[in-house]
Picture 1 (cartoon, helix red, strand yellow):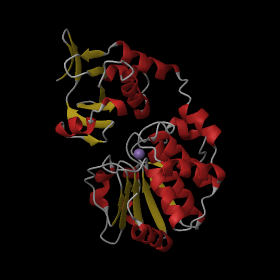
Picture 2 (cartoon, helix red, strand yellow):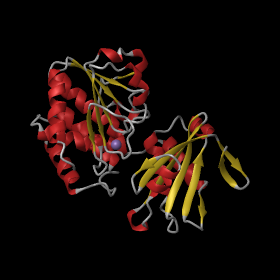
Picture 3 (tube, helix red, strand yellow):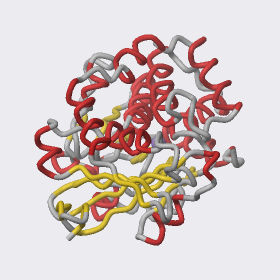
Length: 321
Ligand SMILES: [Mn+2]
């Protein structure tokens, strides 16, 4: 990790001097975004200060039992301009920019992220794309600043790290990540509960989503791309699957031995299609360069992009029109 000691010190100073802090979780929040905002909320509230979490979506179902009482508030219904500081953690380009015009000059804007090519700017910027997750970065913040990590902070942090590393299986997992996980478990993180609530994909609709994606897969023998599509109608029928489950579908496509990388198209919202690219370490493909060509970004093994249009099935395959 880069040396963030001065940024960490500044962030700690800002939190200690703030009366109220607004935390922001990105649209369609994943375990990392949820975990980061809940861990910060716990810490800030333990200091007797006000901390709210804003998100354009509700608290995801997987987190409901783990974190009773946590409410994600609609940013449009919150007095964004009244908080002393605003901290966005994880994928800060997804939704946070919509709040930008409501910030006041005196407010301290903080970004914590591990995605490359972030466009948002802030007063304190803690971004390192070699880190596994935003939760791992916050773990280092708490440790560096000698802030006690309580069990209520350890559980969301562990959830975020496990989420973004695919249970410590993705290549972004470092020795430091393992050390962080071990420390968090010692500090009382509820590993079993996280595993059963967040990673036991036993919902029939999730299996149906993956089934749909796999059954429609086609492979381009020229470049080794395996691709599939999930339409707006599928999304409705499957009861609005989570982003995580859609990304897993993209990962699953890579199981085909001839596939060099996978591309799953899904209808993010009417008029906008998201493409999720995945590959595996031994395949030597950098999917982020493909994503960048299409206006997106990501890591070597996981990338994505968004394009305007609608997914339609044609006799030749799937098309975005
Ligand atoms: Mn993340």
